[in-house]
Length: 138
Image (cartoon, rainbow, N blue to C red; front, side):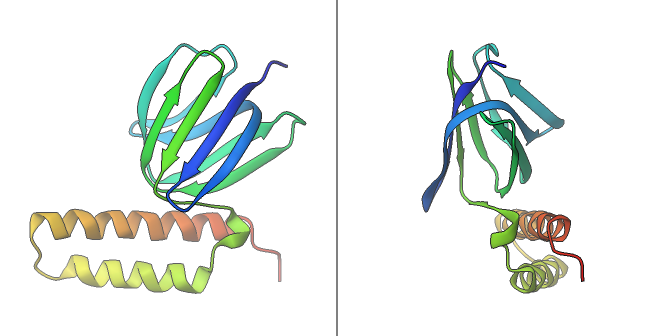
């Protein structure tokens, strides 16, 4: 199967830089996928889980914040504020962040503060979903 170069950049690190067979990412109207030879495009990434198949055929996943995706001829660049592997997520911190965001949403806020609180809530919920999927069975 053909591959393309995938580079996932978060604010604090290069999350992934290597060959990839397929990338599945959350967009504003559902999930989208990119494979080798995809037409050039730029689009927004929503908060959620990305999944990609590396050159060995192994699937990897990450929980990402919102950001941008750019598809070029043989390269895909994904620029996000944060990217975490599910095993890196501290579920207790994510739960606390979700509760804080819910509390902030229940208070009277400016429109900017409201949108920030909604984004914080979406990110916390995505992190909890990602951590829950990949937690070892007890």
